[in-house]
Image (cartoon, rainbow, N blue to C red; front, top):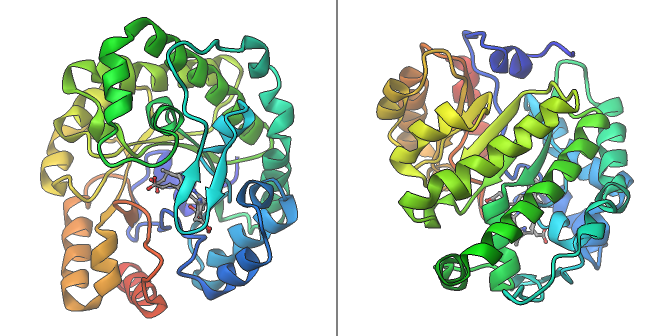
Length: 342
Ligand code: 1CP
């Protein structure tokens, strides 16, 4: 295992200066990313091109010297591998053929995930070979619920109305689809873990839309099942869970999902969450990406509040969600200087 500030923090060490990285750190706010992106006509092919994926994964490390890189890929690679006809339409976002309750789940497809997504493994391997030893490489997948919302809605959504209706109107079919995507996610994470990712992260970006009474079944149980399956196969890498917008549900998630660390969104009060989480559980977060967009003294005040609140536990500094494309580079630099001086 490579020793690095981020890995040490995940192992439970409290460092005087927290390691830092940003969700969505390889992306459109970077001019060098936009140059590479413009030359790629198809987003999925871009993700499946190990040289290009490696190149953009390393860009934020080269520019900002972050403590971790996150492999350039997408949570929608799983639906793509499941033949859901995934396309990224510029200006619109992802589009998929909507899944309907009468559709048959093709179990045989699950065994092809490792092959179909092998290039993500190659990109992980290549990136790991180019990264300095003290930098961690993060592999990731969407948590099953968040991935299912894209499959049922056929793209992004504001209220997830079709998915939530399905969950009440077709409980058996919903459970079967959840199991199916859970299995596919295990295969995808295995590819990245075996290729040498140091850490794995599960993004449940739309956990906020799950009815509270169903969180155990829809948010917590699938993550626990994924982690138990990985552990059974000998995967030892630490796993970060990000149940975004889950509110007080974070207490049960921390206790029951078997994750090693928790990513905290910017809607969660840091003092509260610090009090309710198990003593030594590492946390990551949680600056509001829009505070970073604006920068200045309000941002440094927010950073200080986060640093103070998590002072007594292992902490990885990060945002509460992904950086937004219009964020000025100088604000990112200001944030990094402020975190590193403290
Ligand atoms: O053209 C482009 O450049 C499109 C922007 C983009 C990028 C940079 C997309 C399309 N995906 C990615 C890469 C990506 N996606 C990464 C690796 C890069 C990095 O983090 O540095 C990661 C971790 C993701 C994860 C991802 N994709 C999530 C979970 C994290 C989050 O932000 O909540 C989600 C929800 C997606 C879906 C997705 N991918 C892309 C779009 C436009 C969307 C839809 C977002 C939405 O519904 O709001």
